[in-house]
Length: 64
Image 1 (cartoon, helix red, strand yellow):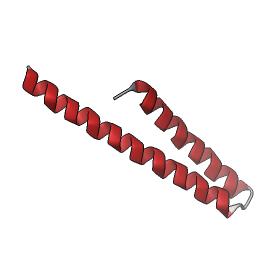
Image 2: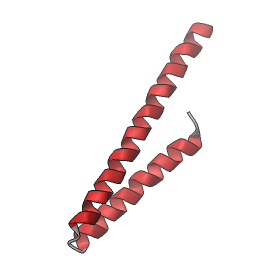
Image 3: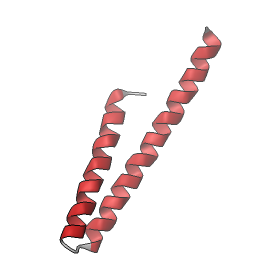
Image 4: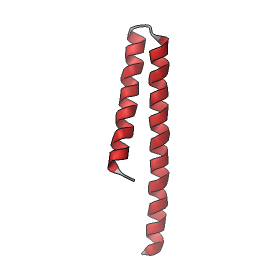
């Protein structure tokens, strides 16, 4: 789908990794959990984008 969505999802994933690393460095289990949650959310959104892209590819194949 939109490149902006994909970039946003990747940024959210990277932010989650940073939050998780910060939590580990400071022994803050809550931040570790938040970081992992952010990463999972971003990956789920990206999977949805990939499904949309695949659907569009199939639709385009039938149009040709």
